Amino acid sequence: MVVAPRLNVMWPTLGVITTYFGEVDPHLSPRGHAGLDIAAPQGTAIVAANEGEVLKAYWNNDGYGGLVIIGHPSGYETWYAHLSSFSVEKGQQVKRGQKIGLMGSTGFSTGPHLHFELREDGQLRDPLEFLSEARLQNANW
Picture 1 (tube, one colour):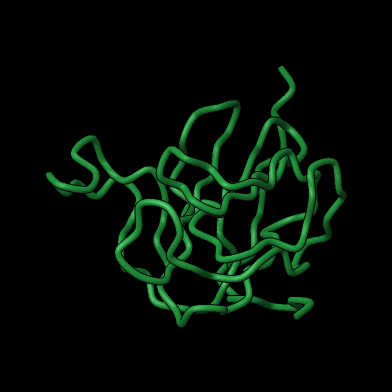
Picture 2 (picture 1 turned 180 degrees about the vertical axis):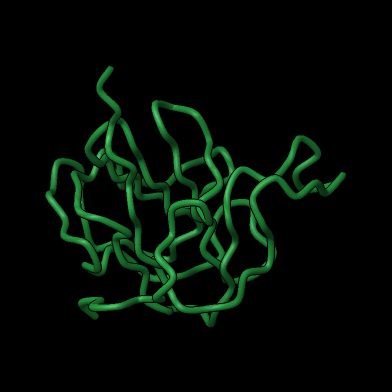
């Protein structure tokens, strides 16, 4: 049996974690929060957590607001939501630590933050299980 390599991702931004994966809020996420929310000032840089291909970069009307989705090897995807702007486009190859956009409060949001999701073969995973301990090491600001 071949085991796919585990994705090791870097922190996509500086900031304070305000909501953890799986947290239940009866008003905002009654089924459990789908990602990790990291709050910081409006306009804080967001970087690619690992190298990959931009699958989508668009304005989402389902609550994510400005959204970038990056596909990575072995069936992984990282999602970056509530961006005020993005500097990548669909089909573009990005490097680990490359700036992809700016933090915002677009979509269903209560203030500037990054909603960061990690999916493995379409299944939501806790980003903290994959994030490297060093925050923003070698980021290309």
